[in-house]
Image (tube, rainbow, N blue to C red; front, top):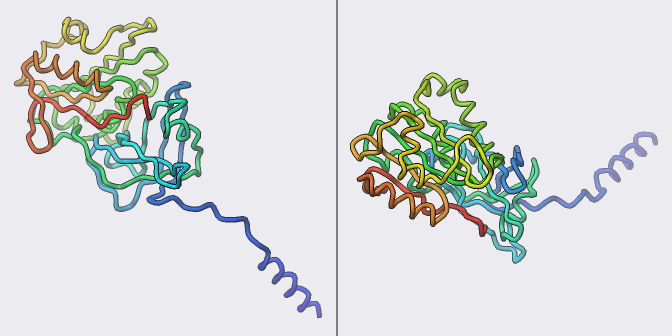
Length: 282
């Protein structure tokens, strides 16, 4: 009788209705870390599909399910290097943005959609060999360079790497600053980095040690004087550009005045521009 009672209780417990399972998103990856840098900027890490292969500097489509039941996706540069076991992204928060108004609230354990088809122009293969590499970014345009700065190939190919990053306020530079400061202690690339890196963070609104737009600091020669470098020339210099459409257009014109030419995966030249940058309307 006792055995029958236990069996009945066990059966009742087993047959009790479980909590409804959370539906899985298509191409779902799980959030493993979220960091809010300012009220406008955050970064997050997610699991990496076992089959995903990409070149440092490329981007993928990520997002969430929209209210209409269809995926709401935007292009995001992968901020982690190709060797990382997880994927990292760096994003702006837009209160009325269709995607980021919701994405900014993700928590560890949540799922996002990630389409594992990486593409992009900010890759080493799109540049001819050179001795100096310039990374030119505004705002969250720093993301692909967060990947490339942690890529061993960057330091093996170039004798000097100049990271120019411009934001409106000092706090908006924090993600990039912390990453740059960690490079020399990185067990994988620390020795490769050595004294090759020149970091040039500037602000345009809030006062800071270095001020001004990237275009102005290049055309005036201030960055060359501050860092003790010779002006750009097409024999030595290679550049990658990531920012708003207006920024990309303006920097392209500056680089062309220095004699550099825009390249692509199919035709490597002296500089490349990321045309799929996620801007303020996301």
